Image (cartoon, rainbow, N blue to C red; front, top):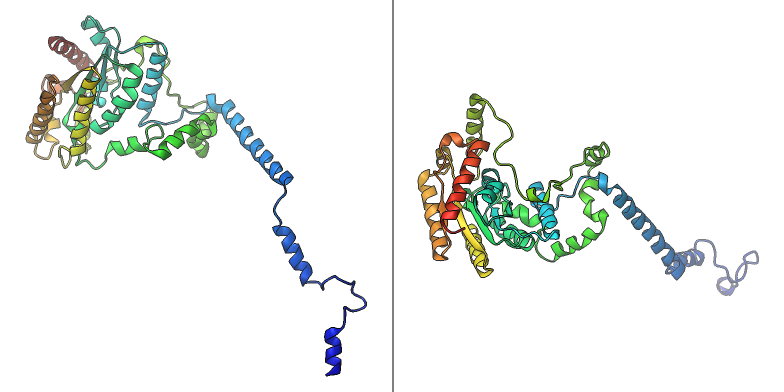
Length: 369
């Protein structure tokens, strides 16, 4: 018992320095404490300096490579991106549109802006910014938020058809429009657009895609800026570039008809109709003259509706009534062109598109445009 007490009160062994803990005990705890000790200001400054060198170096590298990279896809489509660039150029030169056409690919392919300038005396600057794949909900945002602030049009003509109002289609283009970087609504959309000042952010999609970087490095970058003269910006050549044989054309029409999903489960949508009336009300408040054109379609287009022409006629009665309530003129040209004039279920071929454009100019003159 006495030996145990002596051991308990004895100091460290003679061969162990006084005050140092045995290996694996307090010395390990001290090392851990030193590892947990906060970094000093010099270490933090050094880390920040290294971070800035990497980020700024990457930024300068991307900016140097930017002319050789494909242009960012910030808008609803490449057509929309190119149109925005063109409208920005026109605005920078102080050009205001005398007459602007909006709508879907029907408008883009069927309406020749140059014809309007030639046939309507006080139209010197006519533009066509129709968006393929759009609906009325897309046109609402596109026209009110992108087109008008840039072109400041004196007159707007909106070419419409029943597919612009179908809420029963399997896809809804407004969803794509609302997720595009340039047009995403809300706080995160605004924050993302602030990041455009950084080329790393601006070209992030290209930098993430090895194949795009490979094709860009081989000189195949896609550029979405229209370098045509000012007079030709925000306008398009109507129709289609090639002329297939009669047999090929027949097959194209039949194939397009079987693939026409936009008219399945047809229903005039509440949101689509609300977007239409919102545009008409907004244009009138801004004292912009507006007219609606019901675009020409072939008989095959009518058959693509679940109930055929009955669905089409119902849609037409709804949109005409909404325009009449707001004293907006409607130019009804749905059956103004023979079926042989159409390349597919929706679009006119090149020569018929010029014919239709001349007819439309006459009709617009007739209502005071």
